[in-house]
Length: 212
Image 1 (cartoon, rainbow, N blue to C red):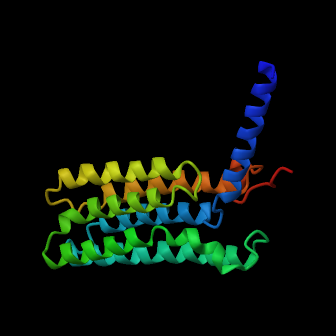
Image 2 (cartoon, rainbow, N blue to C red):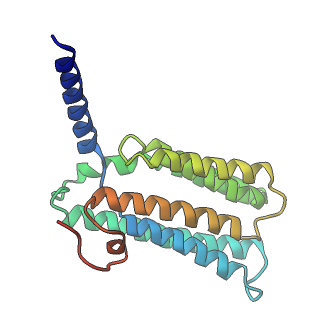
């Protein structure tokens, strides 16, 4: 067989492989909801850093708890809407299986957080949360856009740095707010354009129309 025909055959196989991988991508997560979660983290950092906010570990823990609950409600609410409305989902609950992949890491994070709070080790919480969130992203990488793995590394790296230098920083909310703001906006944009490859950047903000 001539070399050109071999190359063409290899390219066809690669194209089929790319299409199979693309078909396996989970598109249920909302890029906008993810970006909103990052924005909530930055807002929380601003509120918790105000002079009028109680400078106690309990008050800051409550603030981050509310922020986490709001972000989860936003993301999983958008996931539920996708299941009900998107023709690709067809209201098939089995389509949500990839969303279960990060649950073991999240549950482990809850256990570690409870143990650290019970022992008064609040300074280790930010780093622990970032490491757990990094593992949650990495565990879903097989189902998500390629950015999921770099995002996992990003959060793991940030968490490792904070754990290595934990020295009374829990009452400083800015490392948590900035890291999650940047990470969730990057992930949100990536997820949005995977679901809407023909969209413009302005469309992410609800401006203009998607190109055909």
